[in-house]
Image (tube, rainbow, N blue to C red; front, side, top):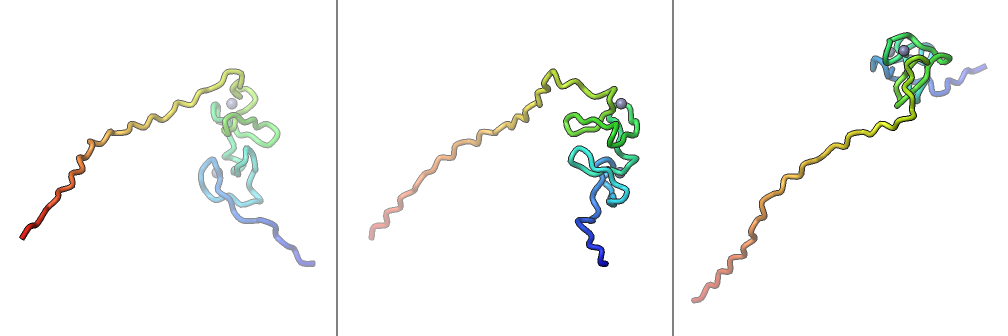
Length: 98
Ligand SMILES: [Zn+2]
Ligand SMILES: [Zn+2]
């Protein structure tokens, strides 16, 4: 029988940004992780699919999972638009009379 691999392309680990192969990857929080890279953001405890919780796409253990009751407001990036000096568009009319 022929074994057809389905989507066995190596992925990038979200924890260390290195290649992670499917046989050693954990898929959590819409990303792939090495088993050792899936850690709580707060206490660095190694997590697995049973113990991981996520908040804002970051992995947390049950203990340090932030409470989602209060909404975090992402600070808006203020783009300072430099007002360019208004260019005076002068059209010089040159009347050449001979
Ligand atoms: Zn990794
Ligand atoms: Zn933790």
